[in-house]
Image 1 (spheres, helix red, strand yellow):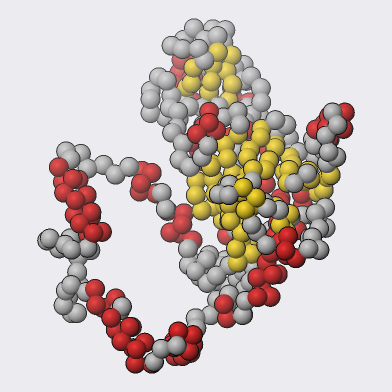
Image 2: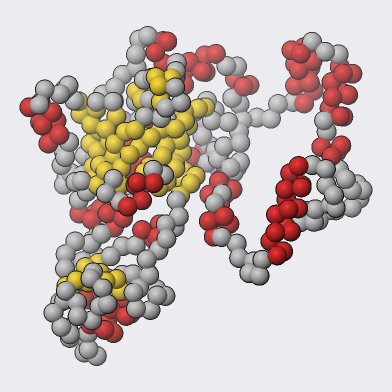
Length: 383
């Protein structure tokens, strides 16, 4: 069970602004879900399509209008009334009609005319793939009924920001945005977070270039924690995991800070948490690699969501990072970082694997010169 239990005050679980347009007050995710399910009818959050005749009858009753009035509204507001071509003709969606009256079409026509004046028609990769993740998942149907997210499940949208030591952090943009359900545990989020520091290989390899260790930092240093509302949730799944939050807790005791609690990350579901929407929380791994974690939305699932629970945690956005290429060839992505290198044009210098071996080793693999080299993981590898 989680260390945080739901409040007995039902009004405390109704999200309200603590600071307007910044973050909400504290509420329990599971109690928030239960309150909505108590107030909504099952048909409101059902995945089944509502019968059109039943919907029309309920709409007429709710709005207090006659049935013929509804029929007139449906005919007037129908998509068929927007058709500007014969029914039996399939229009070319890339061709904008001359002198369009709709503002959206006028803007599209203006954009097409501008692109026609360009000498090089090159589409930005970010513009091309900006909504790719969303297009792949929105409304995706489940192949196996057992893999469907149950009706009335709560879905959280979470932003994971760059590490505070990373250059991109100053731009305050999320590195990745994920969607998780209330039944997911914190370890599901922890395992889904991709960070460069998890892929680093520690050590200097100039003398053992072909013997670089097979393990990465994430396999060797498995300790990590989340910090939500005064509780450290530690990852203790493996024997080699350590409670790295104890240092902070002991320091807080000696400086008259409020006492903090601890819980296991693997035993805590999101539905058990007390959180604030829009409030910055902390994820720490590799000892000192710290990420801001902000919950931006908590809502009930609906039929247009991706309902395949096997795809969750679901990445809905990933920030594109410019890759750093080899200083010599400017073609391949950097693999090795050298210092004290007389063959390098800069200090430190980045090389791809091919250029690095050609410049620093002879045909028999013997080291040339006195330099140090370290493994480099490019952040653009996550693109």
